[in-house]
Image 1 (cartoon, protein in one colour):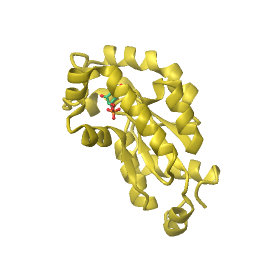
Image 2 (cartoon, rainbow, N blue to C red):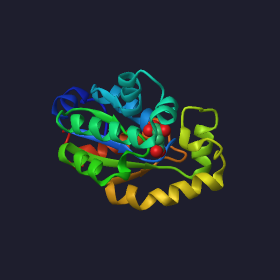
Image 3 (cartoon, rainbow, N blue to C red):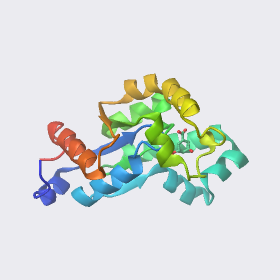
Length: 186
Ligand code: S3P
């Protein structure tokens, strides 16, 4: 798979690609990498929600509570499903609601990015923007959270891509292969 024919790929990419996975699994980085390759826009769910609410994710959690945030995610996914051609970087909890997964599957495919707890810890160590990791930045807590979520992540995913010790370009190429196989790009 090469990127020489990106123009044709971009033109033929009309569905949505939903990247799901735990915090720090690489969704944002890979969506950005794919965006460069396919010339399609990224929808960064957290960023879009922050923009619309005019406050940060931690502020939304502390002022309105997690349930409020989860409903914003569902509303945004419903809007996105009605559109196409987006590389959607989902919030780490977005695939936990079956309703959300149904919405995603209406308009595209779901790729789960995975990473070992050690890798996750390395990637999130300096980040203060994730309320669910407050006081839990250690491999044991991260592993426990991942294990709790794993069944829902795996049930939701059409494909899984492991990200440990791979470059962004390598991961993106793997996903291009998936999109090609699915007939979403040619
Ligand atoms: C969350 C993940 C975050 C953000 C919120 C909740 C989760 O997104 O949506 O802090 O429940 O896993 P990222 O996965 O982009 O960090």
